Amino acid sequence: MKIKKLIGNFNNSGKSLSQRVVRGGFWVFLLRITQQLFNFVRLVILARILSPNDFGLMGIALLTMATLDTFSQTGFQQALIQKKEDIKPYLDSAWTVLVLRGFILFAILFFIAPFAASFFNAPEARPIIQVIGFAVLFQAFTNIGIVYFQKELEFNKQFIYQLSGTVADFIVAISAALILKSVWALVFGLLAGNFVRLVVSYLIHPYRPHLTFDLGKAKELFGFGKWILGSSILVFLLTQGDDIFVGKLLGATALGFYQMAYRISNIPATEITHVISQVTFPAYSKLQNNIPKLREAYLKVLQVTAFLSFPIAGLIFVLAPEFTKIFLGEKWMPMV
Image (cartoon, rainbow, N blue to C red; front, side, top):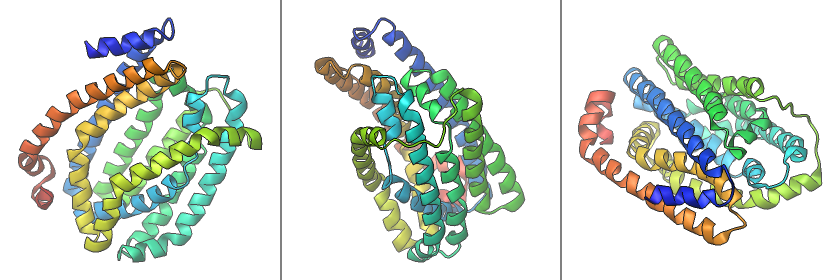
């Protein structure tokens, strides 16, 4: 009933919005299920081949990258999704800023790698941090036109775009793990996934961005994006601040255990929330002029999320030891 009421709220804002939300929800749900199936199989295989220390070293590199990424968020994509008017005049300026940001982050990652590795007392992390900088570049050059997939609720195309990278990561990471049996399998998988998404973004959407910058349009986008920056920093500190603490004080191996445990235990909250937010954010933007309906829709979504998440979280709590032993192996039992 709650879901029906939520859809009813969306229906009031446009003739076919409710149908698009339901259809979009199906594709987002299908994407997450398919991605998590690939990721779960990948995780089980890699966890048995690689060591917790390997995952910890990758965790340190990703933490370093995520820190820079979070504190330099532009929020442009969310701003473009939220905009009611035609966004085409804004695309080139947004893409140009993202490309420039990508080069800057790549350079910073390369030069701070020794200091980050020293901070975590993990010298092996230095080359990993430097190499994953290429993932930032691949993301920066991604076709900005794919923002239309979310804005127009065309999640069938988003499905193809996202899944292509997931499959590439899956194939490359597992193949590299079997050959190298080291953390570099995780690195190469990450790079492959981002590179394939970069290529697919231009194959699946006809828009071709150009290096053009309009200060006025960039300022307008950042007017909304600055709030995304603030919320991103807050979320980062809440969700990954503890990772920095663990990595610094306890080392890469402990971080590997900790992140694996966190990742598995948070599947209900993160996955269900991701599916719902992917669909509802663009739908919310279409209700932005109807505050009572927007508020009601948000509260209904919150209730549905909690209703679905809590039972699954309880099940994971009860079955954690058996799950770890069966799927990940004895070497991962300390994380339980």
